[in-house]
Image 1 (tube, one colour):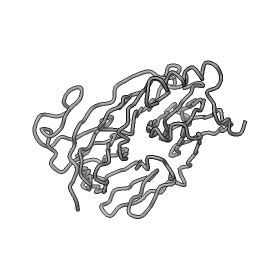
Image 2: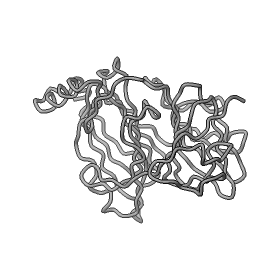
Image 3: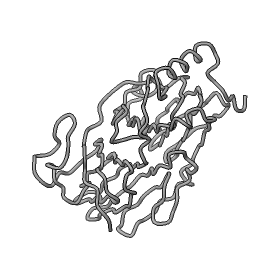
Image 4: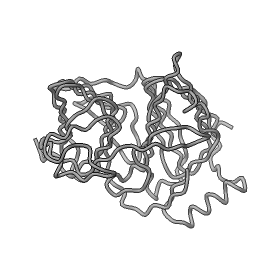
Amino acid sequence: MGAIRNVAKVWKSQPTIEGAGVHLNRAFGSANPRLDPFLLLDDFRSGNPRDYLPGFPWHPHRGIETITYMLHGTVEHGDSMGNAGVIAPGDVQWMTAGSGIIHQEMPKGESKGLMGGFQLWANLPAASKMMDPRYREVKQETIPAVETGDGAVARVIAGTVEGTTGPVQDVVTQPTYMDVTVPPGATFHYEIEQGKNAFAYVIEGGGYFDPDRDVYAMDFMGGSYCDFGKDCLLGAQTLVSFGDGNEIAVSAQDEAVRFLLAAAFPLNEPVAWYGPIVMNTREELQVAFDEYQNGTFIKNPGKE
């Protein structure tokens, strides 16, 4: 047992429109020292096809990794390297844009119209911004579901839980990324190295994200979510940023809580970001957009 991390900041995801008109909720979408190296988290769950069918037609990326995790429906993917495929419920698409990639993501719902998942952006360090792009399609059957000693179940995409390592490895920032469900009455304990940034995003249910359950210790963005005092239950579509320490403790009381958990060491580098391109300087951004306009953006055409 080490120093348990308290909740440092809490905020709700906010509605926004992206792509060709996709309605989604954005948990965060800016360079925040508390979340570095993570840049953006979008929650695109909907039962209305009009919210998602416009999709994300062909567009470029450079300097980041995009991680798409599906819960419902499918997303059809294609890119400038010649990769193509479909990710279904439980699948992950982990794309390293590196020096540059152009791709599209077109969602489709289940038979009753339900479609949903999450897209997380992870920054690349300056030394890796122009690495060769790569695409990994990770099927749900290869993602281990680890039942922990305290009764929780963690689907481990990247990182290690109780000796079981997720299928996404050899990532520059060596992140942890998992989908955790804590049943009523249980507490999930997980060690996260001191100095790493860590956040949780509540998918469903509600839980307590530090042992004190003390709202006075929390910094709220966009208003408070509980009466000021103790026993602050944090529910769906809430983003929880943890303070420093080397362990988190998440407990459920009367209902289960399901959440995404991500952690990594911060890059502590300058961020120059516009749209789908993330570099370190404005000059590098300008180069990227100039290259996109003149047809020299793609450095590694892959299979083509």
